[in-house]
Length: 112
Length: 114
Image (cartoon, rainbow over all chains, first blue to last red; front, side, top):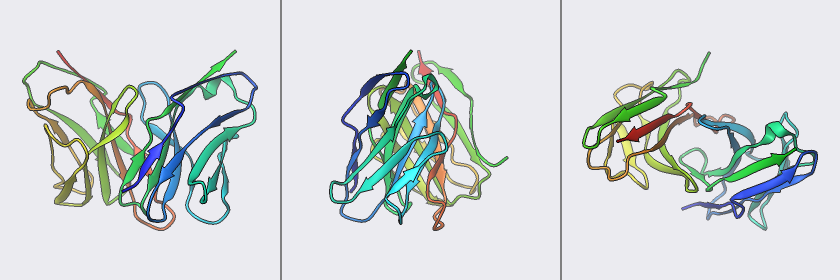
């Protein structure tokens, strides 16, 4: 079975500062990797995903994540955060779409 | 527009009553999932279905039941056997095609049992 660990439950950061949200996973098979964002009382929205190919993937709003197979990590980064980035972020893995396994989430708070 | 619709958004029930949460998708996805979300615990899988008329228990299936009579619909019933049903419930679906493997989520139903 797969598992996902998000070590940081809460990350406060000042506006325009860089941020990294950490995600590690364990799996005995190859997986797909995802980052989702959740705003209060809403569902999850896909932020970015890694399926294959380039290990660095980017989202349309400036986030990026790098797949590191040797460290089994998929950390999410943004060089300069905005107030609107305040949300809950979930890392997830999927064994080729059969099931999805989610981390416990990281609450990002951007401080003005 | 294609997507997943969960209804209602907010639901209040008295303790001991069964309640059914609706989930409908028009994405033509084969797989559908129900998750429960509690503060600090992330998403926990209740049930999932990979095909019509078939479903499997997830990690926390006790006190819940589902059906998958149609591809588009995957309703979840929270029974009186569920000890702590107050939570945020999320439905999701996914396709298993090569380039479309992410899960798509509904807007959730917040169930409060009083």
